[in-house]
Image (tube, rainbow, N blue to C red; front, top):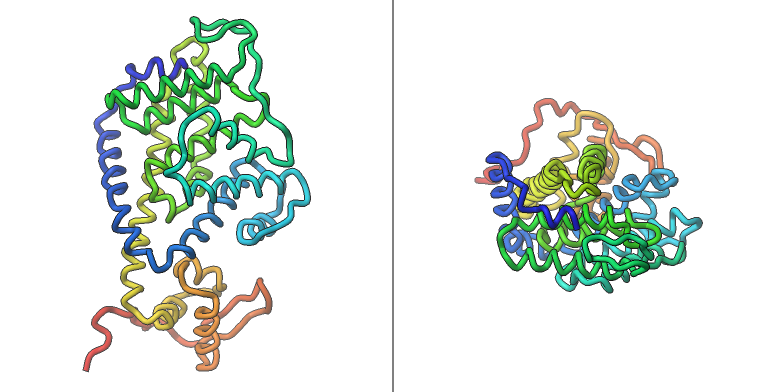
Length: 348
């Protein structure tokens, strides 16, 4: 428990404090987001899950093609190998967190069950036996289950004091969990999903934006900071400051995306959906695909997108290049003077 036991040594810098204030301000907007996105909740949850699954496959370096990862993220599938089974298990865990984050309770049984879900049809995990005696926390040949129980109790006790910022507690809990190697295998996968569950419970905004997309973008920095924190862990002086900063950066980038998207979404809801898609299409300066449109309009159905594409094609404004999933579309009118829609477009 070297990270949590030494948490009082952590000093929050002024610039870090400002980032934290912005994070908790963004967290407070969850009620606004829930109301704004209520009519399109399922499509947004599916989009977030899809992005999370694609990103976590890359985080763990699964040996699957991009096309297969994309398919598995969108569809129900029968795994063909262990990597696909792991991806399916991770997808199921992430989906459970999305739907039931409030029910997640930090107890050893919950973590063990999470581990069993992650390793389903791959391997069986079990608590390690340890020969180490560490300041009375462990007895010779005791199970690491006792260690985990003690770690959780320490986390809960520190939380109750309301002395420490919650994300700092979560990060230091994670560092201890990883270095204690509670299970005989898959500690990295289990630890990351525990970290994700704890952060999601604090910031349910991650229903609407992928945590793992930004985690993957910062993976190298995250791993370096975790190595730094683990380097002095056994000497009881882990340096977790850098890892805290990386976690803040990931969350900050994610929540900014939700905020930006909410403004665009609110504007779009005031426009006819077909007009909104048409406006987007005619602003493309190069060949584009339906996926390019979906990124901008994630809540609009495929049928509406197809209807708009065929309408513009029939009007002689665009043409198809290729067929099937790889099909692209091309603007065939001069749109350099195209003016975007505004709220004052329609008046007489």
